[in-house]
Amino acid sequence: MTMLSNITEKPKYRKPEWLRKKISFSAQKEMDQLLQEVGIHTICQEAKCPNISECFSKKNATFLILGNICTRRCTYCNVTTGKPFEVNDEEVLQVRTAVQRLGLKFVVITSPARDDLGDGGASQFYKITKDILETTPGTQVELLIPDFKGKIESIQTVVDSGAVIIGHNIETVPRLYKVRKASTYKRSIQVLKDIKRLGGDKVKTKSALMVGLGETEEEMTQVFKDLIEVGCKFLSIGQYLAPSGDFQKVIEYVKPETFALYKRIALDMGFEFVHSTPYARSSYMAHEYLSNKE
Image (cartoon, rainbow, N blue to C red; front, side, top):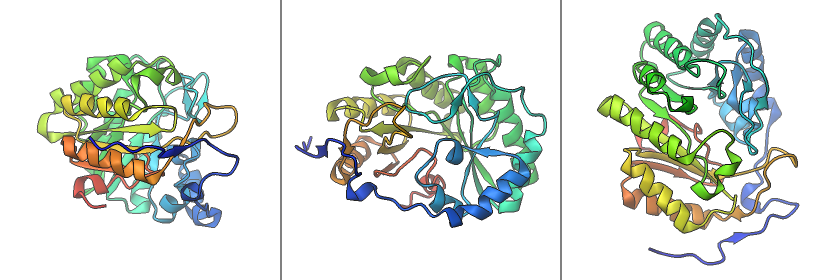
């Protein structure tokens, strides 16, 4: 295995050149207005994604269903933590309306953790996906799900929804899992394994990793192996950026050469598609994974 030395640097007040991405608020205006009119949230807005201007200008968005309040308090995530509201009965129609008004052919749907619900929200994923597929012919759906506390019934529900990709993010290496509250590495790996076991060839599985939290190349490589062993063939790797000073600190800014190295290692292991760049996120340019175009 090729090793790179001195490929990271300690964070400074100013981000390195490769992380100085410009945000155009004017490019977001039209999308913000539409989403407000429809009454639906996106993870792009809630998580303060650095790609929001680029994606919104192309009318790409990842819909956040089941509200915008999470029942877990992960130390890297900007989504609000608290007591969620009841499930919105109008949400199926709201998502359908947004999809049709935007003319989307590939839709990504995610949610906060909803540990207050018996099925973790799996039935809402199912209803919304089925509705899109039935009312918007030619559109494909990708789901990015929480772990549902590992409940096999919930995983079966999302597998049966008709989504072509079902993702669950590993986020980081086992040693650093303290940043993921109420989650375990073992459970997340098992969720991906169960999705593939239940879905077979009709479902592709996908995961994502943040770097810059202090992980090592050896730890990352082991996670790649674990993902391959459970049939996960799609992977994104991106730089962790703290939403503010109140969140988990960035330990290092990983250089582009390292992202290229991780991509090469992962592809050599058998991944079908790997998006590994500083600004890669789990849903960024999601339609490219099936087309295998970068």
